Image (cartoon, rainbow, N blue to C red; front, top):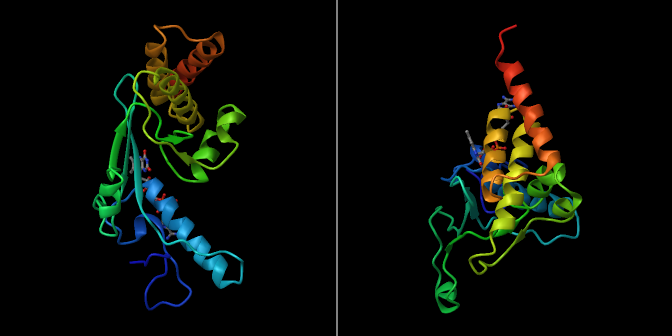
Length: 204
Ligand SMILES: Cc1cc2nc3c(=O)[nH]c(=O)nc-3n(C[C@H](O)[C@H](O)[C@H](O)COP(=O)(O)OP(=O)(O)OC[C@H]3O[C@@H](n4cnc5c(N)ncnc54)[C@H](O)[C@@H]3O)c2cc1C
């Protein structure tokens, strides 16, 4: 169990974040938000000039579809349900949104304020320069470039973790979005990843 600032009740100086807490949804992005709340509370307790922000869960997920992915985002209550407040209803802003356009950037699978830019560092510096930002849903139709960039980024993340099969699938998705054409730099990577996958599968 941990409170809105990650404090474990009845145990002085102990904070918790992530899957080990009693928050009902277990997800990397939510874990980073709990860690942010705990880090700010600890810093404030140690005298840093910060106003701690409580954990306000926002679930962000990517649904891989074989083409352009779907971005899913939902503001949650403390119980882990979609949070439909009267302020949201007045502003006609639903708790949950679905979009083919990026709803946050960098569009990492682990959507954390600092972790998403860190995981994007394998991609050009443009993606990793700042903290993760939320976007409002945009008009449909201009999603192809986002989806292509995302597929390349996921391919690189998977390859960096040694999952060449998944990296090649992400590269196939990128290729499908450009009519089967990939820049030479990426076809070279595809060849290298295929070779790496085969050598990993070959018995010693
Ligand atoms: C297959 C799978 C896919 C997932 N995909 C996604 C995704 O796409 N996006 C997303 O946001 N989330 C995803 N998740 C969920 C995400 O991985 C977890 O919610 C997140 O890792 C939780 O972070 P954590 O720091 O709380 O725990 P963990 O990441 O589990 O970290 C806990 C660490 O503590 C270590 N540890 C355990 N016991 C001890 C001990 N006694 N001493 C020292 N160290 C110890 C463990 O080895 C581990 O490294 C996925 C989970 C799974 C299983």
